Length: 212
Image (tube, rainbow, N blue to C red; front, top):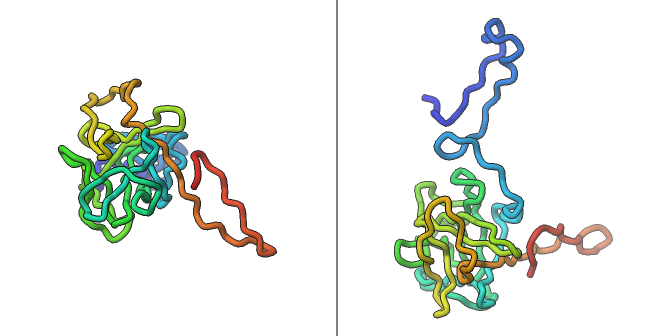
């Protein structure tokens, strides 16, 4: 049985006598959730490519840190525990991602706390039925982003050094402009440079965002 979200393609030969040349214009269209067409990707999402590595800098000038105990998410320096790999999830929205950490766990917005998922073999092994591990990236200007959770809260860097939830923000409403703890600066990690002709290192392609 075909999916109700998929638009069929009319056969150009069998339908030609009924639709003429018009039948040739029918094509399969990509659709998003609830049968709607997928939203076009916003420019601020261009750097968020599947498999890219980054750190997320907080307003306190430190970084989101996944702890080795597989549970806690704190704030720390620019080390390996602060590195995430982007997993894009376009089936849930053009700005939907998951963040895979150093200890093979995804960042997770649990009901009452920010913690880590169970272990997964690699950043692409994201179960589609998972909900708390999804984040929706929002552009808040000045090169910063906010990460909206499944619970309609935002990821927040508390002054106590722990990552937690913001208060809830209603669906369709923007993040309050005066909020600071919920804003992050993506710091992209440059891939290893490849050696080009004559033994010189090839210059990495420049994209939006800062590099380390």
